[in-house]
Length: 130
Image 1 (cartoon, rainbow, N blue to C red):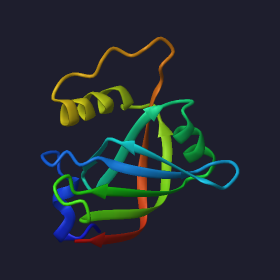
Image 2: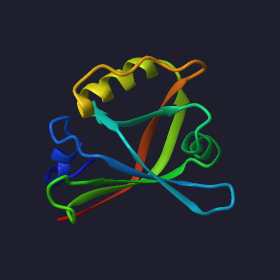
Image 3: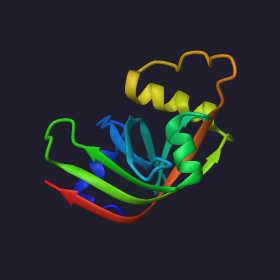
Image 4: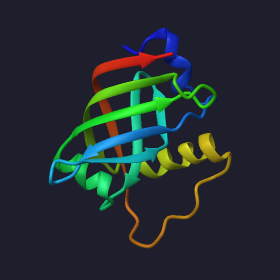
């Protein structure tokens, strides 16, 4: 599904950050940088239940995700589609793997009442540049 020319941006080695656009209750966009994992053809992000992006995706699942090449700013992969989830199953392990990918160390201890959730980004459109 993702073009061969840009698969490197999805790899753990590149550690590219994604910019996630969600839809606010008033219809305006909200953009947040997020960590992601791409495994077995699935693109997944992690957040905390109750955060703005979690509320937005749970209520209005339309999203856009832009993954920018860390070395070439005009080379990117853009994904539009729906956020499926949230699910708590495996979310603590998932954030631990994300922390290893992006920071090279274990994730900090969960805060009191912090509930991690995973969303899978189901692509309906994929565009590239560069």
